Length: 193
Image: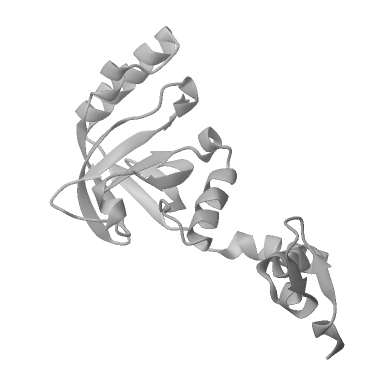
């Protein structure tokens, strides 16, 4: 086979046979980009993909506590430690299962409190887990440069390194649709397990 005789020089001066290069991950990824018809087809398919949803139910009293802290943060210009120390009880409905939680505001800058798109840190009670997580953050994907953050975590997973779970959900608070939110695992002891 002639392809076994052809070698490519790489930047670190190792020689790679061409047939190994053609099977490499780099080539397979760039090969996908070279097919614009597939890109258009995948774009159209994306409108029909079902996203999971989180339905958060907070009592009106607890919601008002968080709302007041957001009001103070916007007046001050940033979210401080006092704002983040207000823990409230809530329920999350995910895949027809109810989870008791404690949640609080998260973030420092006001991009975590744009209109009704607030960022939360969530801790599940009673040793419950969602996709193996008992602590996680819910935030507007725009606070983390949209798709760069999940690509980073997928790259870590692909390379066999430690990574955080990161996925998107449709968020509802007390029945009101808030929009697409990112769910990011919180780095703690469960991560190592």
